[in-house]
Image (cartoon, rainbow, N blue to C red; front, side, top):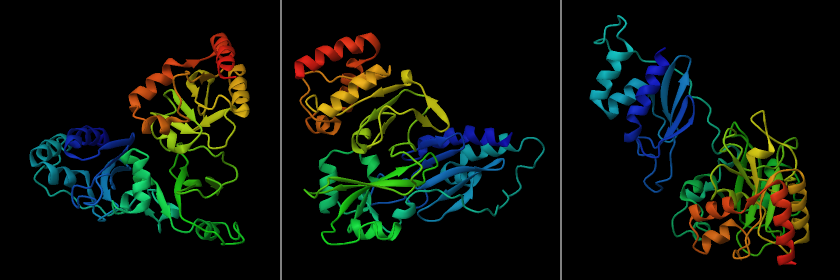
Length: 342
């Protein structure tokens, strides 16, 4: 099939594409080689190769460029293009014929969605106060394009859920964190205060039938999954989701697959004197799930605080793996851990 030849050549040109990432079997994302995507932000990547029927096409959601995979290859590397034409059309189609022009509708990529009128943190000038606050938290740069500044949180929310906030008194800017499902549709969002506004987090559900789980659009259900409390913490751990107020101990279903206990590691914030968290940890152990019991040497409240204190992502991951327990070992370690922290 032609599509498998196309995939072969996508892999061949991948080294020439910036921020190249495979999204799924027939979808790839990278910075547009035609327009450069964004000179202001090196994290922008709005070019997509996608499948339509038995062919692959290219579309940029910044400059609007749309073409066939062949034309993209030709633009990048004429020698590779020659090889591509010979291999793809060697079954009797004349290779000196011009490549046919295709008319097609651009696929729908759910990127900003309801946030289309908001600026992402990566779009803000480097000296913007909101961007400086977020970068000070050392949040990974690749995550800034899907974090947004909302100048008036109450007013914005009321445009989506009328009269959610009957009064706009005290309205203020917040960082908006979108909760996306497996299709990248936004079903909830969290507003995080930039200052001392209370509550620190306000989570708005747009689909009442869905649990408030952050990271469903990024997690690989076939790999071991880590579960933390807050969305920002999840950005520092590979294949991690955030429960964000959802019961940690409920069955977890991702993309139609029930994730068994052995495929999960539950990571609570490091608050050993918080009675509610202690109860949740005990219940998690009783249910047979893997849980992290932070060592006494770790004084930081959560993963982001560890990063701010100078820990590398790899070091945090190692500490998590070294202090993960389940079953009888978890029961024994929990008894010891609770005595130490009593």
